[in-house]
Length: 416
Image: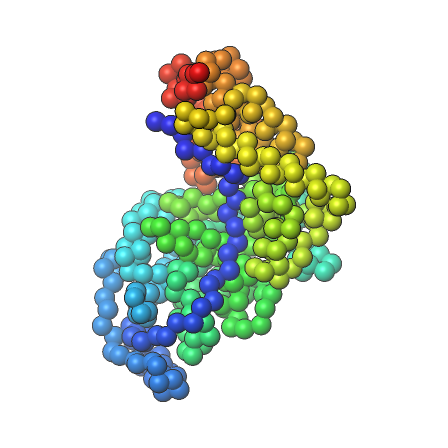
């Protein structure tokens, strides 16, 4: 089986919820007397809302959710609030998603595997501290030396929200999001409120807009809130990388290079393999700030050279990920890619470069060089493709290639 290689260094980007007008027909399972009275009073303020009695029942076991499931049908879909206040040793979690997706989430190891979070959400002696950053609010700074691949934090989400469930200026004042919030344990509510807000508006909605990461469940886009990771500032050449395991929901951050005590730990909010103008546009329109990292603040000459390298990197990655008969993914292409990663300071891609090279050499039958680069990939650590629980698939591929290059799927795959 051929390894499915990403054409670019994959970076989970922080996402902003969609803003588009939606007209709601309001049906609810908000079943307490007070909540019903409040909703009825609010519904009377808008002719387009129609409050109905509680009727929808969740298909998943009732004991999984510690609060009653509350649902709001959209025009084409029903969205419900699901809360488990005991999740991750009492940290808690709230979902706002469809019943069918909730059914699938309930069967994940995150909810079925015991003792999964013993070493997660552990902040007893973290290698970092939070400090004020002039002009940028707060940031996360190393308190001791971190080497490439060293863990920085591993956390679980406190909120997961279906992107299509977000309305524009909903008359009920985002009452469903507020309910998902207040059903969380009190310490977790405080953690939620400790995150930054960059725009005026609903305090819950804007914190999701500002801090949420993007992910998918059953092919549907969702926003995932990891408050601790969200406190890290952006840099276009970050010192750390992060990823999440969709089965355990664990979001892990690792050092992508050596980070010295007192140095800020930065992560990418976007795909960093874009020219400066594109990066600045995306950051400005999505988060309302102009990036002033060392790369974005460099001279016009340096910026022009960097943009050219980025375009070349993307081109070479696409070539090396192409296993068709027309592929130009040669060993020389891979060696050049490794050089460009180094020149551009894309530290997280070091292991990826060696992985591309290992496959390229094995594809032409040079097993000695293939094994050398595969070992280099394992030593470097594929920190941009890891899993919070278990080994990365790419690491397994490299181990397989080292053990028996002739038996690997890539052997002689590009023989001319």
